[in-house]
Image 1 (cartoon, rainbow, N blue to C red):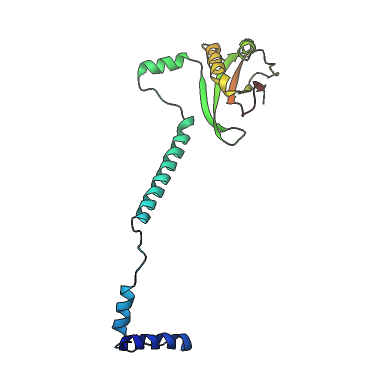
Image 2: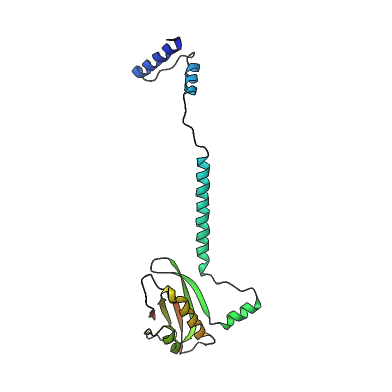
Length: 186
């Protein structure tokens, strides 16, 4: 056994018996040499920046999707004069965001000035509730039929003026599981 090994064993024994002890000044370089020579676990330095970039990309994607969802209820404006004239010829209509029964943002469409006599054929003979002039019907329509019903309402309202025999109709997408059209007069 060498002199350094004897000192090492002595220090190990003193640490076990007495707790922490200070090493002699001439032994410190030898201890550091042994510590440096012991194998170390390799650190994965590339993994942390890669995970940071993935997390940042996910946050940006979520923000872009959230912003795009906010814009679904806004109306677009036409930049050409001909488009404006064509939009005035159509039935007055507005769209506003609302929430369906599941709390998910849904599209609400209001078609203005639809003749009461044309509502029966448009809604496939669904019983219409009594709705006094000035109030509007609220129709919950299953998704497969929604576009067709909205197109029929727009064509029925084209060129119509407000009057006692017209009502505004508010269309909503029906919740999942609802197969029939439901009409109310709130």
